[in-house]
Image (cartoon, rainbow, N blue to C red; front, side, top):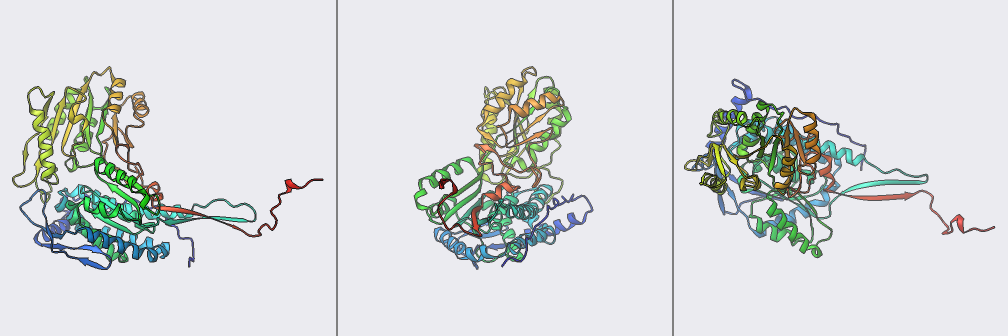
Length: 544
C-alpha cells in the first residue's frame, strides 16, 4: 500500500576531502591502509543468502607491490552463475513489491555509511587493490559512489512523478515497472564507483542483478557488497560472482530471463556480447536492454590563442592521473606550432616532478598500472616509439620496470604522422601522444581530430579565442559525448556532467543522470474510464 508521494530533493555533491598534512582523514586512512595490508582477507561470492566459498583460490595482490598478498578470493564456475540467476529471480517479486521509499532508503543509508565509517575502508581497498593514490581514490570510491547513490534516488523519484495528462471522464497513469527478468552488471577495474553504480542503478529501479566485477577489483567490490548488506539490501537483490567473462556470458546470454546488461569495458567485448545477444533473441522473453560505456581515444585540441600554462596543466592531469587508466584520459593532443616549444618545455619539466611508487607514500602522484598484461602491452608501444624511423620520438619518460610493481613512467610521444598508431589506438596507460600542427590549419586539424579515431567519449578544446571555441564545439559535435572547454577531458561529476559517449565508445546512456535510469524501467500505461460507453455508435453515424 502506498501512503504518500515520496519525493527526494536534489542532493549536494559529496565534499572531496583534501588529505592534507595533519588532517584527521589522512591519519585515519593511513591507519586503515596498515590494517588492510596486514590482514589476509578471504573473499566469498555473495549469492542469495550464502557466502559461497569454492576452495578455488586466486590471490589479491597490489599492482604496485605484486609480491605481497592481501588475501584470496574464491573463483566460481558456470554453476555459480546459474545459482546467482536463480537467486536473483527468486528475490525479484518481493523486491519489486517493496515500497519505493524503502528501496531508496537502503541506498541512501549505504551512501551515509560510505561517507562516514566506511570511507577509509572503501578508499583503502581501492588504493591497495587498484593502485590509486589517496586523492584519486577519494574522488572515486568515496565521493562518486556516494553521489551515484544519492543522485540516482533523486532522479528516480522525479521519474516516478512523471505522469500523462487525462481527459474528462478518464484517468491515465504510468507504472514504471522493473524489467521482466534479471539484469547482468559487468564492471571494470578502474573505478570503484562504476563497480558500485552499474548494479545499484538497476536494483534501485526494482530489478535484481547478477554482478561480475573484474578480478582486479575484487578487493573494493567485496567491501562495497558488505556495505550494501549492512545498509539492509535483501538477499538475492545483487549477487556478486567471480567468474571469467566467457563462462558468465555462456550462461547469462542463453537464459530466457535475461533482461538487460549494464556494462563498462572494452569495445571489442561489448561488440561480441551484442552480437551474441542478437543471435539469441528468439530465446528471450523480451528485448534485452543493452547499455554500455566502452573505450575512448580522448583528445585535446589546442588553438594558437591558448594559454600555455592551461595547456600544460590540462595535459599533465588529464593524461597521467591514475596512470592514464581512465576511459576519459587525455590520450592524444594536437598542439599548434606557435606555442609547441613552450608547451614541450613546461610539460616535460612538470612530468619530471611527478613521483612514482606505492600508494602508502602520499607524495607519489603516479602509481602502478593494473597488471602484467597491461604493463607488457604499454611497454611494447613505448619500445616501438623508440625505434629508428618509427615516425615518433619520446619527449620524456618511457622507463618500464615490473620487478616489484607494474611501474611505467609517465611518457609523452611526439608523432610526426597524425595517424601514428598511438594517436589512434586506445592504450589505457600513462602514455600521451602529441602531434604538432601548422598553427594556420586549425579547421583542417579539427577534421583530423574527428576522423582519426572511431571513439567518441571525451575531448577538450583549449583556446582564448571565442570564435575558435565555437568552431571546435560545432565541428566536433559528434566526436565526444563529454566535451570540455579550457579544461582536461576527465573528471565528470555526477549531477553536473552526465557521462558517456557514442560511436565506438558506447550507447551514451549517461551515467549520473535520469537518462540512465530510464533504461532499467519498463513503463506501463493504464487508462481508466469512469463512465464507460454503452453503445458503439458515434454521433457522426446519425442522419436527419
